[in-house]
Amino acid sequence: MAAEEAEPGSQPLAPLARYAGVTRERFLQEIYPLRKPAVLEGIDLGPCTAKWTVDYLSQAVGDKEVKVHVSPVPQMDFLSKNFVYRTLPFDVFVKRAAEAKHAEYFISEDEKYYLRSLGEDPRKVMDNVLIQVTGKKRVVLYSPRDAPYLYLSGTKSEVLDVNRPDLKRYPLFAKARRYEAVLKAGEVLFIPALWFHNVTSEEFGVGVNVFWKHLPAECYDKTDTYGNKDLAAASRAAQILDRALKTLEELPEEYKDFYGRRMALRIQEKTYSTNYE
Image 1: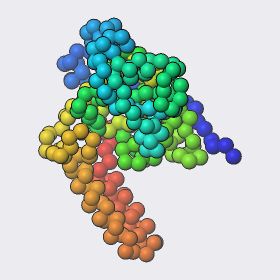
Image 2: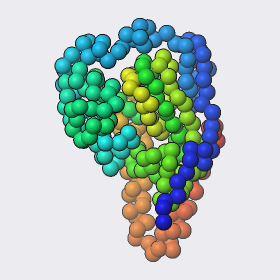
Image 3: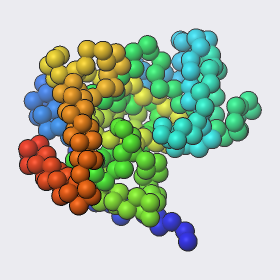
Image 4: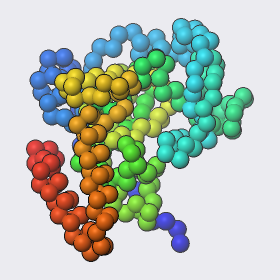
């Protein structure tokens, strides 16, 4: 029997706010406090939107070697690792990435390339803005409040294709509220920390992410060089929970079930907020 598949419209859809001509002051006072993704239009990004062509980037960066993801399909899965790492000179990489078909390739003539970072300090799991300098991307986002429906493994979802998910395998995914936007050249997407996002490039392009810490320094793990660890308090709480769950294993099944449900209700009562959708 074929797996049941869902069209994007099968999930509850929520509008993604768009704002034009946003100043720094307006962003900080009106948009940022909402803690919801938003597309910012009409921001002056300087000459890069016209200047950063394939030829320009090739010449500007030159033959510096970079490690890239190479996949036979557009959807790269960071759980099953359906890609290989390969090293290329940057000028060769950017020219290949702009091709629809490759005369030279690692896997196949229509393989896809993805460069996560050109810099030395990649960061994630923080507030950030995605600046679409050239090209076009389709971005689908899910609120952290829909985490129970996303089939998480660590910080990543097991649902690879959010447009045609296997609802036999992931039935709760249909309940997740879908925020979607097409990000065109010159537009900026604000992505608050904890929001899950799936990005698909609809054409060759260059995007720049800028990350920042917005909580007091003591909230972060001091050993977290790349900004991808849980907050310090959350990490401690997870360790305590693991110990509590291990203790419950000492009980017979019906008792473990009962006290586990009581603990879940207590966690919900003490931590769930009513201030967000």
